[in-house]
Image (cartoon, rainbow, N blue to C red; front, side, top):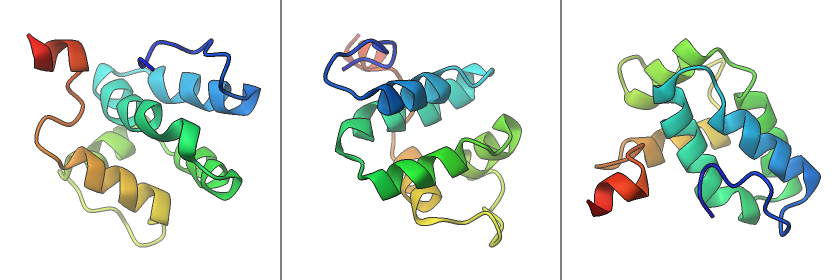
Length: 104
């Protein structure tokens, strides 16, 4: 599933809504980091993980981009298992780079 495939019939309306929110953050950097992580994992998330994801998506783009890029540490009051997973995934080499660009 691509990051822009928000109409995937295999996903529930809640999952499609969260995928859309994750890929339309307002900044390209946040769209790629957050949206890429969510697009790769949304189908497998449990209901509890979806709740955690919704909470993460409430943070400001600028904060999420700083935390996920490692430019600033995630403050203890914001740290959740979902945010930790996202930060780990975003720290991988090539994270946030669209698949189409990586293949080129």
